[in-house]
Length: 98
Image (tube, rainbow, N blue to C red; front, side, top):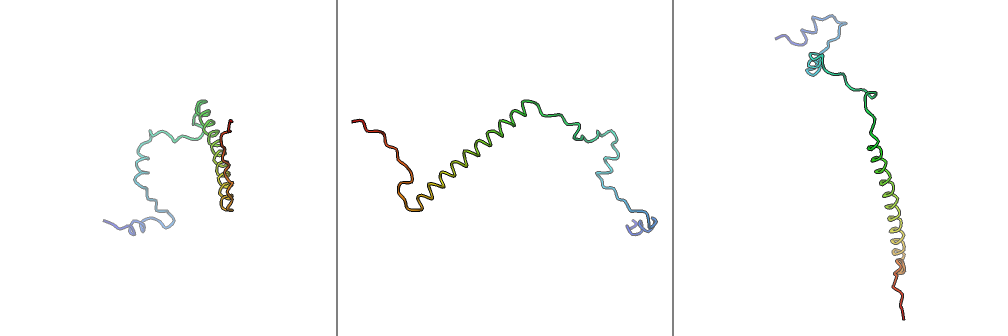
């Protein structure tokens, strides 16, 4: 079995040594393979899918605003408690009817 160095010595010095990988050889033997799809071949999203994406994004923004408001209120409460104040959380008592 001849070595790789003897194979390279048979070829002229200017010719590149091209080695095909097995996957490239398989694809070359199947010419009926469909061409890969390009961005122009893709179908646009349906109206229902676009509405679903829009509703999801609106819910995501609304929940983000709600979360930020909740965290801000909790931070104010913690700052008040860390200062040693006792009236941080107002307690609402039902009105007395006498």
